[in-house]
Image 1 (cartoon, helix red, strand yellow):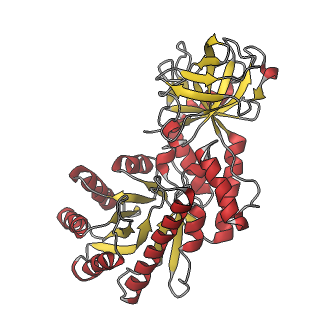
Image 2: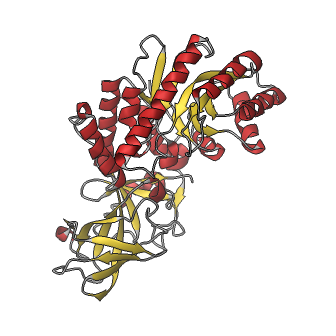
Image 3: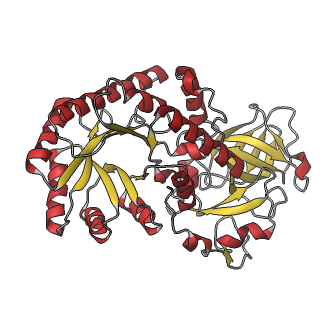
Length: 436
């Protein structure tokens, strides 16, 4: 049964002329009334730059992930940091999400504010204020189900001592993180991780060991094949630790949680974490956050690679579809093959790669809206300017509208407090509120 979040506080929150993406003259407008305004993006009813989320693409992506999970038997705890949008969390919970993943105490606070009852912190919990917040939250709410990671005895003892000092009457759920030499957090060796599992069992009753975690999305310095090989090596380490810890009865009661799988290798995680694990009571949890809105570049290529290496998932229909566009106006065309659109680093992702032009429309002529070919590209971004390379035979003019697709939607979401939800005709049917 789906968990219902308290979204009323978003519904009554007000956009105004001080909200990025709103007209400067806009009086206070409740989010619940946005759909009643009759706004249309192509009619230029709102100022640019402006991000939009296509509702139909969201629905396709939700259907895809539901089918993937049904086919694999895996669970999902989508990463909330992607959108920090409780309205989107609700969609994911409606689709059967086991938990919402966070990385920080602030992200957890947002989840709790809206009523998320199971929170998976895919990170080490450190820092006095952060630890105090989490443990006090667990004291205040007996229904809060919380998990976090450990990768050292020092970290484990820090948490155990905090549980004792605060008088928490239940143990803190932890998972041991496995990592790879030269990369991010996590134990480098199974033997060292196993020693910590023994220490928890024998010396730290304040902690409850619930499983093993890894994150394979950190191998960005490798070629595609290298990334895949390292991901599979990491998953093999996770399985080895789970087996040995289970043999020694080091886990707490209940399923052994094996969790990995960002938005690049979630197919490997769902499949490979189950290899030779038939005798263990395991629960595989993937943590993709970007699937819901997908993107036009980085994760679109990743999805194509997934279809090639895991053909059993290639025919899930519908597939993942980019849902986010950022729109801007052509403000200058100083050269025949160079235009400037009115958006930049303050408005759109650029950390993974530059955005890509996806659409063009003559101002005041919605019927002229068309897709753009790969001959159009973004050369660079300034804070408020987008350099657009044009083909020789272009008809781009100052005042035209252009839309742009992104790579890594996380860093487009975090630039906006509100994103407009639109139908396929670009009618505004709602607003999505973020809490970064």
